[in-house]
Image 1: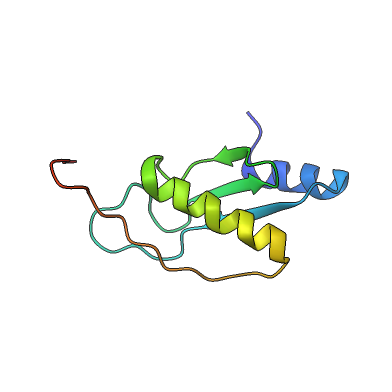
Image 2: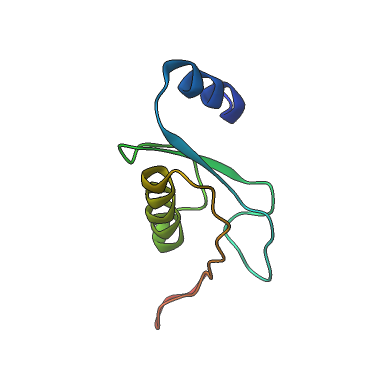
Length: 87
C-alpha cells in the first residue's frame, strides 16, 4: 500500500497540483486525531481521509480553493452533528 509521502512525491514528480491537509489540533470528539493527513488533487480526487462526511467535504472544498489560489492556508473547522444524528 502506498503511503501519503510516496503519493506526495509522485504528484510532485508528475507536476500535478495538489494540497496536503493535515489535522494539527482536535478538541473533544473528532473523526481523526492530530497528524491525520489527506491529499486533495486539483480534480477533487483524494488520497487518505479526514473521517468522511460533511467535515471531509468542507476540507476538500477549502483545499480546492488553496490549489486555485496557490497560497497555503491555515483553516479552523468544527465538526458538528446535525439535529437527530448521533455518534
